[in-house]
Image (cartoon, rainbow, N blue to C red; front, side, top):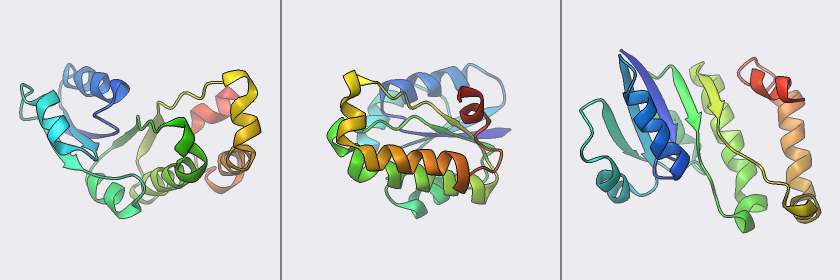
Length: 150
Protein backbone atom coordinates (compact mmCIF):
# COMPACT_ATOMS: atom_id res chain seq x y z
CA UNK A 1 0.00 0.00 0.00
CA UNK A 2 1.34 3.45 -0.90
CA UNK A 3 1.40 6.25 1.64
CA UNK A 4 0.54 9.94 1.15
CA UNK A 5 1.16 12.68 3.70
CA UNK A 6 -1.21 15.68 3.70
CA UNK A 7 0.25 18.74 5.43
CA UNK A 8 -2.55 21.10 6.43
CA UNK A 9 -5.15 18.33 6.50
CA UNK A 10 -7.51 20.29 8.76
CA UNK A 11 -7.97 23.06 6.18
CA UNK A 12 -10.37 23.10 3.24
CA UNK A 13 -7.93 21.88 0.59
CA UNK A 14 -6.36 19.29 2.90
CA UNK A 15 -9.72 17.94 4.04
CA UNK A 16 -10.90 17.40 0.48
CA UNK A 17 -7.60 15.87 -0.54
CA UNK A 18 -7.81 13.31 2.29
CA UNK A 19 -11.24 12.26 0.99
CA UNK A 20 -10.09 12.18 -2.63
CA UNK A 21 -7.13 9.94 -1.85
CA UNK A 22 -9.27 7.58 0.22
CA UNK A 23 -11.53 7.10 -2.80
CA UNK A 24 -8.55 5.54 -4.54
CA UNK A 25 -7.42 2.00 -3.82
CA UNK A 26 -4.27 1.11 -1.91
CA UNK A 27 -3.42 4.54 -0.53
CA UNK A 28 -2.84 5.08 3.17
CA UNK A 29 -3.24 8.73 4.22
CA UNK A 30 -1.36 10.53 6.98
CA UNK A 31 -3.33 13.66 7.92
CA UNK A 32 -1.01 16.24 9.49
CA UNK A 33 -2.02 19.49 11.21
CA UNK A 34 -1.38 21.27 14.48
CA UNK A 35 -4.85 20.62 15.91
CA UNK A 36 -5.39 16.87 16.31
CA UNK A 37 -8.72 17.32 18.12
CA UNK A 38 -10.13 19.17 15.12
CA UNK A 39 -8.89 16.42 12.79
CA UNK A 40 -10.39 13.68 14.97
CA UNK A 41 -13.77 15.38 14.64
CA UNK A 42 -13.32 15.87 10.89
CA UNK A 43 -12.15 12.35 10.08
CA UNK A 44 -13.77 10.20 12.80
CA UNK A 45 -15.98 8.34 10.33
CA UNK A 46 -13.22 7.44 7.94
CA UNK A 47 -11.64 4.04 7.74
CA UNK A 48 -8.40 2.76 9.18
CA UNK A 49 -6.42 4.03 6.18
CA UNK A 50 -6.19 7.50 7.80
CA UNK A 51 -3.63 8.26 10.49
CA UNK A 52 -3.93 11.54 12.38
CA UNK A 53 -0.60 13.11 13.26
CA UNK A 54 0.10 16.32 15.15
CA UNK A 55 2.65 18.38 13.31
CA UNK A 56 3.80 21.94 12.81
CA UNK A 57 5.48 22.80 9.51
CA UNK A 58 7.53 25.46 11.26
CA UNK A 59 9.47 22.56 12.79
CA UNK A 60 11.35 20.49 10.20
CA UNK A 61 11.61 17.44 12.49
CA UNK A 62 7.82 17.34 12.72
CA UNK A 63 7.50 17.05 8.94
CA UNK A 64 10.33 14.53 8.63
CA UNK A 65 8.70 12.28 11.22
CA UNK A 66 5.27 12.46 9.55
CA UNK A 67 6.80 11.57 6.16
CA UNK A 68 8.45 8.36 7.29
CA UNK A 69 7.70 5.63 4.75
CA UNK A 70 5.67 7.89 2.44
CA UNK A 71 5.80 8.17 -1.35
CA UNK A 72 4.07 11.54 -1.64
CA UNK A 73 3.80 14.73 0.37
CA UNK A 74 1.00 17.19 -0.33
CA UNK A 75 1.51 20.77 0.85
CA UNK A 76 -1.97 22.15 1.62
CA UNK A 77 -0.89 24.47 4.42
CA UNK A 78 -2.44 27.90 4.46
CA UNK A 79 -1.50 30.56 6.96
CA UNK A 80 -3.03 34.01 7.47
CA UNK A 81 -1.65 36.64 5.12
CA UNK A 82 -0.09 38.79 7.91
CA UNK A 83 2.10 35.78 8.85
CA UNK A 84 3.41 35.16 5.33
CA UNK A 85 6.57 37.22 5.61
CA UNK A 86 7.52 35.72 8.96
CA UNK A 87 6.51 32.07 8.47
CA UNK A 88 5.91 31.14 4.84
CA UNK A 89 9.54 30.90 3.82
CA UNK A 90 10.36 28.70 6.83
CA UNK A 91 7.43 26.40 6.01
CA UNK A 92 8.44 26.15 2.34
CA UNK A 93 12.07 25.42 3.22
CA UNK A 94 11.02 22.73 5.70
CA UNK A 95 8.60 21.05 3.29
CA UNK A 96 11.11 21.12 0.43
CA UNK A 97 13.90 19.81 2.65
CA UNK A 98 11.71 16.93 3.87
CA UNK A 99 10.69 16.03 0.32
CA UNK A 100 14.30 16.07 -0.82
CA UNK A 101 15.66 14.12 2.17
CA UNK A 102 12.96 11.45 2.02
CA UNK A 103 12.98 11.42 -1.83
CA UNK A 104 9.25 12.10 -1.97
CA UNK A 105 7.16 13.47 -4.79
CA UNK A 106 5.92 16.87 -3.68
CA UNK A 107 2.66 18.43 -4.76
CA UNK A 108 1.95 21.92 -3.52
CA UNK A 109 -1.57 23.27 -3.34
CA UNK A 110 -0.68 26.80 -2.30
CA UNK A 111 -2.41 29.49 -4.29
CA UNK A 112 -0.94 32.97 -4.16
CA UNK A 113 -3.49 35.70 -4.75
CA UNK A 114 -2.35 38.88 -6.41
CA UNK A 115 -4.32 41.13 -4.05
CA UNK A 116 -3.85 44.26 -6.21
CA UNK A 117 -0.09 44.22 -5.76
CA UNK A 118 -0.26 44.28 -1.95
CA UNK A 119 1.78 41.12 -1.56
CA UNK A 120 4.61 42.44 -3.73
CA UNK A 121 4.65 45.75 -1.83
CA UNK A 122 4.39 44.29 1.67
CA UNK A 123 6.50 41.15 1.28
CA UNK A 124 9.18 41.85 -1.36
CA UNK A 125 11.85 39.96 0.62
CA UNK A 126 9.62 36.90 0.81
CA UNK A 127 8.85 37.00 -2.92
CA UNK A 128 12.56 37.26 -3.79
CA UNK A 129 13.45 34.37 -1.47
CA UNK A 130 10.74 32.12 -2.87
CA UNK A 131 12.01 32.85 -6.38
CA UNK A 132 15.57 32.02 -5.29
CA UNK A 133 14.37 28.75 -3.76
CA UNK A 134 12.41 28.02 -6.88
CA UNK A 135 15.23 28.62 -9.34
CA UNK A 136 18.40 27.65 -7.52
CA UNK A 137 18.40 25.96 -4.15
CA UNK A 138 15.79 23.24 -4.70
CA UNK A 139 16.01 22.59 -8.40
CA UNK A 140 16.04 18.84 -7.76
CA UNK A 141 13.25 17.59 -10.00
CA UNK A 142 10.67 17.52 -7.19
CA UNK A 143 9.01 20.70 -8.34
CA UNK A 144 8.49 20.16 -12.05
CA UNK A 145 5.18 21.99 -11.87
CA UNK A 146 7.02 25.20 -10.90
CA UNK A 147 9.10 25.03 -14.05
CA UNK A 148 5.99 24.45 -16.16
CA UNK A 149 4.37 27.52 -14.58
CA UNK A 150 7.20 29.86 -15.60
